[in-house]
Each structure stands twice: as structure tokens, then as C-alpha cells.
Image (cartoon, rainbow, N blue to C red; front, top):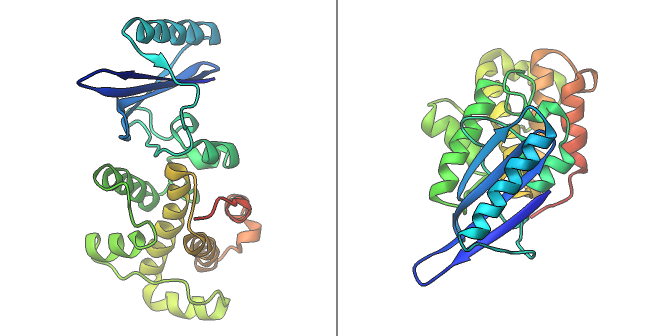
Length: 240
């Protein structure tokens, strides 16, 4: 359950919302119009979670916060808590609804969007960048990260012909792998944070997953995780 509250006086305008259910809740709070701070808390039982959530709500009301039943949860940016890592409750509602499989919250499986070092680092870089500039350039980010920050060559997917990919990989395999992992991580990150994706980045993300599968020698339709990522990315329709 999600409930949002706002506080406004002559000096400040603040928001606070809570999303509670099961044995955990997430809160997001800060200056109205900002991304704010995200926190998570876990409990042993659903009853304990609900009691603590209701206690916090009563505390906010006592301090002068007023419930905002029209609070726009969709037109916001979502960032995971550093302490708890990837979590559906600190992801955009469209992301958590559409990308519900546990692979999208893995921080250890190399095949998943954010489980590789490259994918995880890309997500953290984006989190840091959007706090400074909410109008972040997701499409240009993969090349910028790889070439300007990592000092490698960004190699876009220009072909999915197995022979051509194998030929290119003979000389530039690591650059290609880095390029692909960062590209599809960025595609998923844009949805996770904003709830939408550009059509161009969506297409590049799908191609990157497919090319990476060719590089490592296992077709994407034989890899359960890669097949799932392609299917889910293809069927996501909130395009900007």
C-alpha cells in the first residue's frame, strides 16, 4: 500500500511517502520536487511491518503533514537505497510491475542487467549523475562511460551475423563485451529509474543482449535469463 503526505509552511515544502506490504516498507522523503532520500526497512512479520508503518504515518500527521491522495507516483525518479541495494519498492512502479522476475534485482549473476561489475557500476554512475542532473542523457551514457571514464572503445552493435561478430571479437572481444553489458544495463536502468525508455535505447539494449550471447558462444534463445530479458524488454511499451 502506498500513501503520500506533504508538509507546507512559509519556510518549507516537503513530501513523504511510504510503500508497505508483506514484511518490508520503503519510504521516500525530501524537499518537494526533488528526488529525495530512499530508505527500506524489513521486519520478521507482516504484522510488525504494518504496525511500524502506521506508527510512522501517525507521527507525520502529528507533525502537520497532510495526506495527498493525488500524489503522482509515476512522474518521479526512483533510486535504490545504498544500504539495501536493488529492490522493487525503490524502483519505478512500472519497472517493478513489468520486470517482476528476481533476475532484475540480482547483484551477483553476470547475465542479469545489474549483476555484472559493468552493469552494477553503470547503474551506480547513473544514480549519482541524475541527482546532479535529472535530465540525464541515457542514450549517450554507454559510450561516455566506456570511452571517457574507462578509457576503452565503445563498439555499437552494427551486425548480429554470427560470423561477423566472431570475426570482430577476435580483436576486440573485451571492448565488445563491455559495450554490450553497459548498453543493456543502461536500457533497464532508464526504465527502473524513470518508468519509460527511448525507442532507440530499447532497440540497442535488445541488440546488445543478443550480440553478447553470440560473443560467449551461447545463442540467446538457449539462455533462460537472456531470453527473459529480451522478451520483457520487447514487451515494455512506455516509450518516450
